[in-house]
Structures are given as structure tokens and as C-alpha cells.
Image 1: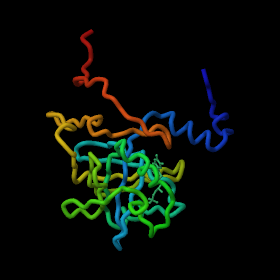
Image 2: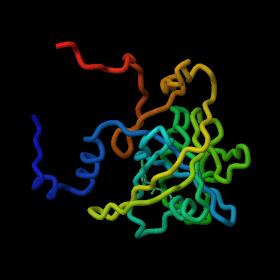
Image 3: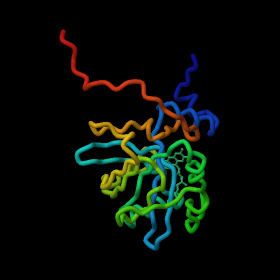
Image 4: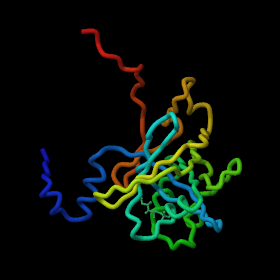
Length: 207
Ligand SMILES: Cc1cc2nc3c(=O)[nH]c(=O)nc-3n(C[C@H](O)[C@H](O)[C@H](O)COP(=O)(O)O)c2cc1C
């Protein structure tokens, strides 16, 4: 069995620690975050920290890395209040990953990949064309995580788009496998998923 203590972790090579700590908490969601600046410049970037916070009201959260370098997504969200969340499917993983490259603010990642913007129902932020599950979100609040100088952004889901009926079951649940939604393993691994089983609401056993 491999074991690392906190002291080992502190002494690790930077990249080795990055890979270990990014993958040891399990699979993460794989999304493209679409934003547009106040002067109309679109932006798209891969995010693996988007997570459910609550369903009523429908809230999501994600962690933003320290804003010590310019972060276009963050600036656009703070300035305009809106962004989109677009599931990554297997056909677009290479382009999706490339959106993490540090382009200057004036260069849109849409222009450097095959990813295309799409505007739906007057929503300010661009959706990613062809993404199978898409959310239109409004920024609500941010919380500083003092321990590592990151931010937790809390937002509300205002729109949900699902590409077709094969993805959604009658009870509302989305079968993400049918959307070909991938999951992120660490910081650079993209994996397909296969549903094993769905279970009814768990109740205590009669003792
Ligand atoms: C797989 C993967 C997941 C990422 N997840 C996040 C994340 O959750 N939060 C974050 O701030 N940056 C994350 N990044 C980094 C951003 O994609 C990267 O900083 C990007 O350049 C931000 O673009 P922007 O400056 O246009 O906002 C991730 C990068 C990769 C490759």
C-alpha cells in the first residue's frame, strides 16, 4: 500500500503533488463556463469544480483560483452577473481542455478552438453550441476561502436546456451517460461514464 503523510505531501515535487491532490478526491464535473465582457468579448473556460449546492432555490457553486492573475471568466461574471455552464461531451474534450490555455484577454477561446458560441432567448452570456446539457446562471454571492486565497462563487440556475428526450427520464433525472457527458480525473484526464444502477430513496432498515 502506498502512504503519504502531510510531511511527505509538503516535500513533494510540485507537479507530482498537483496530480496526486487533484485526483485523490474522486471524479469531478466537466464543464465549460461561457461568459461575455461588458464590451461584448466572449470567453469560454473549462471548470471542474462546479457542484450542486441546493435544488430549491436551484443553486450551484464553483471554486475560483486566486485572482492574483487576470481571470476573464471572473471579471465577466462580476461585471455582467451572468454565465453559462455547458457539459463537456467526448467529442469536444480536446478543445475543452485547450480553453484552459492562458490567452490574452482580447483573444476569445472560441476563436482558438472549434467550440462555437450560441445565444439563447436573449441571455447575455454565450452557451456552447452542441453541448447536451446547458445552464444559464446568475451570480449571487462570493465567499473568500482564506486558507488558500480562493473564492467560492454561489449562483442561481435561471435556465436549463437538455438536448433531447433520451437524456431525461420521466421523474426529471438526467441520465448523463446518454448526453455523453464526461467526467474529469485530476487536472488533465477525461473519462467516459457508465451508469451501474439507480436506487430508490434510502430508508433505515427495520431493526
Ligand atoms: C481540467 C481543468 C479544470 C479546471 N477547473 C478550474 C476551476 O474549477 N476553477 C478555476 O478557477 N480554474 C479552473 N481551471 C483553470 C481555468 O480553466 C483556466 O485558469 C482558464 O485560463 C481560466 O480562463 P479565464 O482566464 O478566461 O477565466 C481548470 C483547468 C483545467 C485544465
